[in-house]
Length: 337
Ligand code: SF4
Image 1 (tube, rainbow, N blue to C red):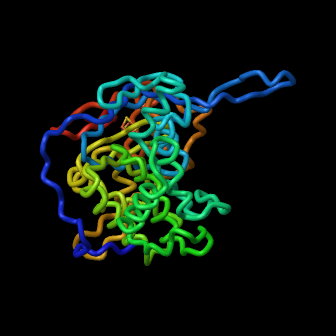
Image 2: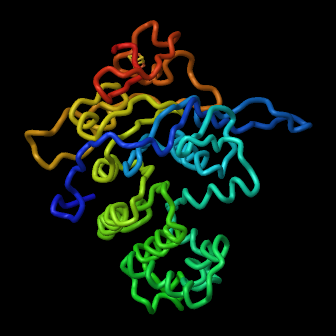
Image 3: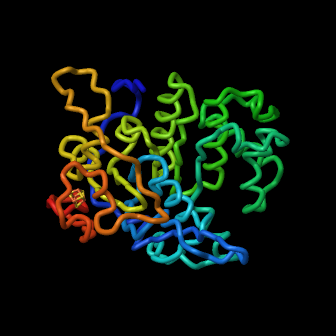
């Protein structure tokens, strides 16, 4: 997709050491696999397999990787839409891994999600006003007049006219529906938004408008984003730092510049080599990976990438490299470093 550098909000933000908002420690999310006559658990799909990372307040961390790498499961586990198998989720220093009931309901005001499919994520029987009002009504005691005024304010912040209030989702284009979804996510003034492929279902012509809106709202509402996408040019445009996932594992995390200028993990190098580059001088040789991504139900021993890695050595099938910092702020999980 073509994202113009002149678009509003594309200037890199200065890196200032900020407080940690989200601290993920050794997170695992496994899905049980049932089999046999008695439908017993006969194995597990290791969708997220022991990942750790932090997100600072006001930062955007991009998560990339091929489909099935565990990035969406990571987002849903952090939101506690899925039960973590192990590990810890700390939000503003508070452990929310195992909270439930009223405590979880209260915590959920602070983290919201923007979904991939703006067509499926809006209830077709509710008006736009009702869709955006719902979370506010669920959490706040507020008069009808105040509620309507809050919703109209949100509509205007996401670039929709006041007339949208009484209309229904099907009356809008994909980009407008995603704006409605964003207004709903903002309704409770959350601190963290997990955006899961928020533009991948949209026409290329409107993708950059929605991305730029998300950037503007980040400054306006003091938001922190976990931005999940498979499109590396979209993630580059949006993120301060980027985490690369492969087969449920985090294989590299670095600042945007460091990752794109000097990718260290062979998997990241292959992903980046596939990004189209308009400037012929900057074009890199495309690295084609052989074979398919192995099943997360039966992941390879040692380095999860060794079955496809062009640099694999004999020991790679036995040693699982830990993510380690090899340059300031640049972490990689590979025995070559
Ligand atoms: Fe490749 Fe070995 Fe590094 Fe894994 S540990 S990425 S197989 S070189």
